[in-house]
Length: 130
Image (cartoon, rainbow, N blue to C red; front, top):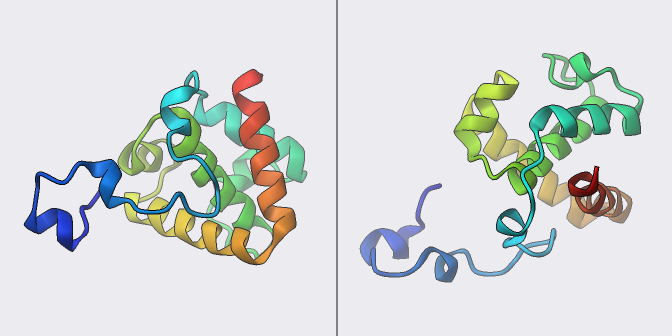
């Protein structure tokens, strides 16, 4: 991940001091607390939950119904697998910047839509237990 301007000028600032707030989606330390979940498991769970075929979920379609679910896949993959953007991108056939952008957009959507946030939190809670 890139460091902000402050981190760039003063590399002695520890990364957790740089990130600031925890954002809409809660505890960022979640990544280190969980057993790693595979991206495939996340993909299949979202597919079941959304009634979108797993292949379509990671396909090229830019249909409005699919995009939020795909972005949720990126966000859950980032939170639960311990992988960074490049590795998630490799596994999903996307550039790492696509993953980053998708996660940012998903965070925005969660801020506007409590149902999306609730669904995300539910899946984030349940996935490590599957």
